[in-house]
Length: 248
Image 1 (cartoon, rainbow, N blue to C red):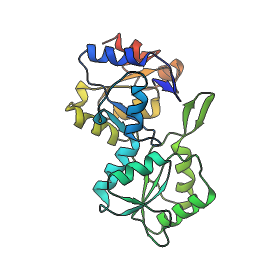
Image 2: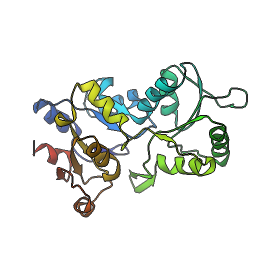
Image 3: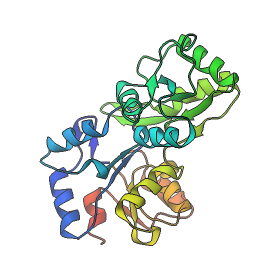
Image 4: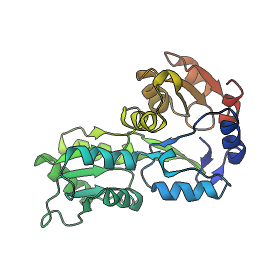
C-alpha cells in the first residue's frame, strides 16, 4: 500500500525513484475497480511520478480483457459498480446497459458500488439465473479507509452470488489474471518477479500460487502476527514498501 484514500503512507516519489535506481520495472496491480487507468496515472502525477498506462493494471481492466475473450465485442453488459469500471468496459468495445429488459446483456459484472441497492441485486441475480455470464471484479471483503476499514467489492458480490445461486468468475487477486497481465507486459517470468502487497489472502496467496516471490507490507490489512501465522510465510516482511526495497 502506498496511499490510504488520497493520503500517502510513504514518500511515493522516493519509492519509484528507488525502484528505477535498482533497475526494476514497477507495475501497480490493484484489485480496486472503481477508477480508470487514467485516473490512477493522474493521481500518481500529483506525487510527481510518471508511469505509462501499461504499468497500471486494475481489476476493472482485467475484467474487460476477460470479457473480450469470452463474449462478442459490442455486446451489452449489466454492471454493478462505479463509473471507472463502466468506463473501462466501454473503452474495450462493450456497451453498458441500464435497461436489461430491452437490451439483454451477455454478461453481468459486479464490483464495488457505493450506491448498491436491492433492485440492482435483484436484476443481476435474475440475469445470472437465466444463464448470463457472471464476473466479479475482486473478492476483497474490505479495504483500508481513512477512518478504518470499508466494505469492499467482495461484500457487494456476495449477495448477488447468494441470490443467484451461482459463483462468479473472479478476476482480481488471488486469481491469476492480474499477475499474468503484469508479467506479460514486463516480459518477466515468476522467478524474476516480486509481488509486494498488504493482503495475505489476495496479494500474497495469488503470487505464491504462481511461484512468484512475495513481500508483505504492514501498512494495510495484515499484521505481523498474521504474517507469522501464514503458511508458507512471505519471503519478506517490512513495515513499508521502502523497507522492502532495502532487502533487494
